Amino acid sequence: MGRITEKNAAAKLKENGLFWCLFLGMGIYYIWRMFSIPPWYDELYTYENFIDRGMIYSMIHWPLPNNHVFFSALSAIINKLGNPYIGLRGISFLASMGSLLLLYRILKKGISSRMAAAGTALFSAMYNVVQQAAQGRGYALSGFFLLAAANCLYEICIPEDGTGKSGKRRFRYYAGFAACLTGGLYTIASNLYWVVPVCMAGGLYLLFSGEYKRLFRLVCASLAAAAVTFGLYTIIWLAIGSNFLVKEETSAFYGMGHLQVLKTAPLAAFSRGMEAMLSDPNIQSIDRSRFNSEFILYLERVLNQVYPRGGRFLLFLIAFGLVLLLALTIQSFLRKNRAVFFLSLYVLVLTAMVPVFLAIQCVFPYLRVFTYMGSVLAMLFVLMPYAVWGIVAQVFRNQTGGKTESFAARFKAPAAFLCAIAAFLLTVVCCRLPEYNAGYDSRDNHIYAALEQMDEEKVETVLVGDVYARQNLYFHIRRCRGKELTMDYEQPDYVLMDKIQTGPEGEGLVWPYEMNTGDFPWEWIEGHMEVVFEDDAYIAYQVME
Image (cartoon, rainbow, N blue to C red; front, side):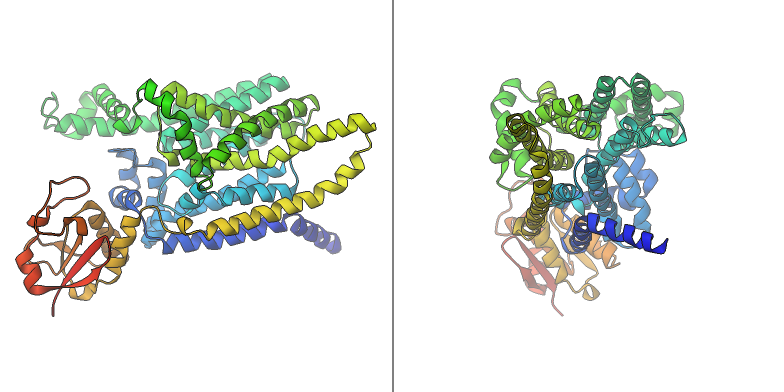
């Protein structure tokens, strides 16, 4: 019995060894990124305004789309561990590691373990995936929920026991699927871009398969997710709506307490909160003529975030891949290869729906909104060889009377191994590129370098002139070093300013600047302070001993 167990363990290690090497390597790399690359503006804003204020605060405040609500709430929990970097980026790290496992798991349902490892490596090499992997934003968590939903959907559509019976085991997949949809939408509302297509893919699969009872259950699970999501956002709308009503002088509720507004006029608070969210300028449509003229260029920009400078090539590759995938979908359906049919249909629907949604809405969202497509494109890239091989093999089979099967069996294994090694090498090369490891915004790197030179034991008061510097000061000095500093506009111990602000004459204030050059206490700076840091972007002064 023990020998059989050892053989099974050895066989599993041999089968999954490539993936576990990748998993371990990426885990080490993500940990390095989590602690070594300075946070950028959006991360710092998220930490100071939501995560560090607690879970409840994060769940009821939405001043801007910057609050990825569920991400902030989960991060607020682990922020209690006491390490700001873990509090800011820990959830993204865990989600990214989980995404590697889930992508490999679902790919193995339809293709070999080596090709599944190759697909996971291609995913790991993507620029947007790497950037979000250990970043204090909700995009990695969104990608995790997508892959978790896809895995649950697979189990719903293709039960392992082949019976499709509904029971506790089946129910947990429906519940898990609904939870993933809710988690995705509650993290970032724009995840509607993948929530709807995932439901469509599952519905189409069950419809084509004639599984109408499971289709009905899937619809019910999706509607349950919609109801829960609506309830969660209702809490936000009530909270921010009441906040607007009590602060707007033109409101009939001006000056009242929040609870009083919620008790007496909940519908007014609800409608005002919903209006505030939907009217946010970041989610508004653009002119149709501009959309039509810039649409292809926008898609190229999105794909440049997948593999740098590869946007145009990827545009043609994906278009070609969708044609191949359509053929693979039809072929696998006719041959009753359920696993490949599911995977190809899933990828086909999610990829094709991106331009459809953009055209309907007439919008160009932030490029990082489509980080979730990393796993979908990785699946597309490894399914394309299967589609090509299916076409080629059919041609040879017709010409040779079916004598190509033994050749195919000999060819597939080494070819898959070579594909996996090539994908692994691509990951290594990409993760060593300067743009992958430079952080998301160079401005914060300059500020971090300046603050590294600060001797906080000799500094009690500070003066900074822009939002970036202030937020970096909060995170790196107050939270990481535990040093409480107060702002002093007359005789500060430490001054940090953007070099654009330096010089004899100040200019009009524009964001992110909070002070004109002329407003700094130059008499004090020139008489009592010395330059302790200077580069091409920032300059720092500290009081002389």
